Length: 299
Image (cartoon, rainbow, N blue to C red):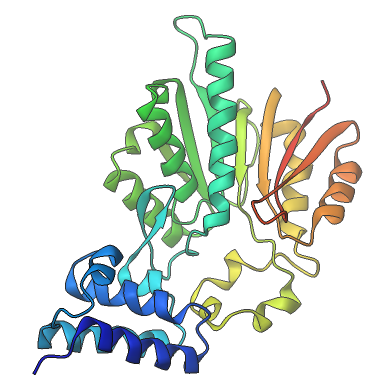
């Protein structure tokens, strides 16, 4: 007799809890849905449905990988981000839900620039840089939202990453979501300058203190360490970017940075030291934790 959905989920969730997963039942439901080629709702809606032997065997391989700590996003090959299925693998960090707030801020800023003061015909597009693009999640989500609002033709996004592998993944996501026509891709360590400044800079750069990485969740061991390691206090790469902003950010431009929840005071001090006279506004996430930083010249 075939085992049921409910039985497989219950057994897998117990195993994942023992292995240290912080969301064992959710992990089990997502992976069983993936094995059955249905979404999680389909799993929840039919707990007594029998699971074919082939799907059960596939599910078992997924659970064994998850028990070792491999992220669910790597096992499934994608992660939901801002309403999109972003392709994910070991070439780049898994996009996190908290980064969606950076996308929202970027969309609001671009929309404001395009609607409050409409651009004359023939104006060049707004230039946006996505630094440390990784999977390209921020850039792809930004253009996708703007396309729905028929604003994407007024924007060009340069996706930048030091890793050629990550940049290739970003290209694959851009093509997969049909937005590559509004993007270009650059392998570089931040921005070199020597070109027209960008109107908007988005940056989800490494911000984890080096000494804290090994104490984080096991699944982070599967993700690129270089995309996490921000030096002794987590802000080394961000400080380098701050030093570049006077050259690479337009006079009326905005930089949006993601930081760790414990870096509110440190980022304020870093901006004050590198950019006297500039403003630094730290925005909280839904949990009331520091998350996104707006850096711009004082008006």
